[in-house]
Length: 218
Image (cartoon, rainbow, N blue to C red; front, side, top):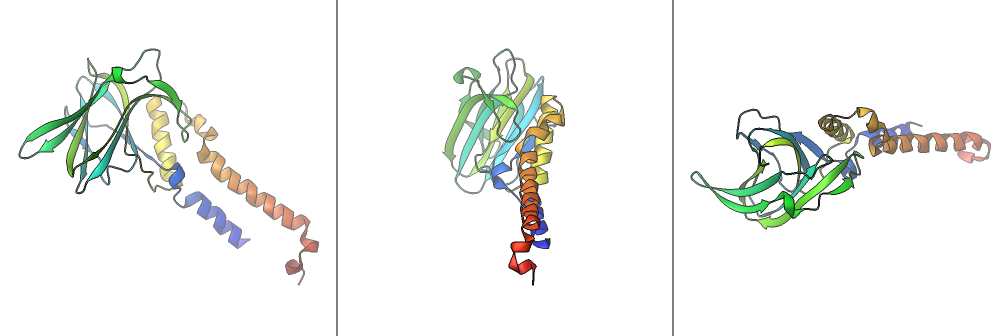
């Protein structure tokens, strides 16, 4: 029995890359202040924020060549999103050079369901390109610089554990402004519940057949 308790604990608390991603809230309040994302720019993170009269900027840095992946996303609404992004490379001493512009009209904004949170979002422009080492900034804006936005940065799944994934999904529910009760219907609940039911069923089977199991009757 101790063995199966260890298996249960491992199933709950060890990292699960298939259900791990990080939600980062852009809460900086100073106009044009840059939000740096630590770690590899190829690790998947969802940056969420709300424009308040000025663009917001995200920064990634790599000492080696890397693949920059960006996917603009939006909370579903009755109108098409109007936010886009400009990617620039920081050039010393105090300059930048434009890399690409992601315009809202370049995407179909199809409705998609996120497999982890089970929340729907509108999928916007996708950009993926190999970049030279350096520092890159992503500026998010709309014509009037107001409104919510989401940007998925990176493609590789992270190594956060179960509770890290739970906290990230909770942040996403808060950003959407919906009840966290909906989290009960996500894989964050189904996965550990499935492990528990499997162990209970296994234990019950052993109990019912204990008379026919030699190792229990020594």
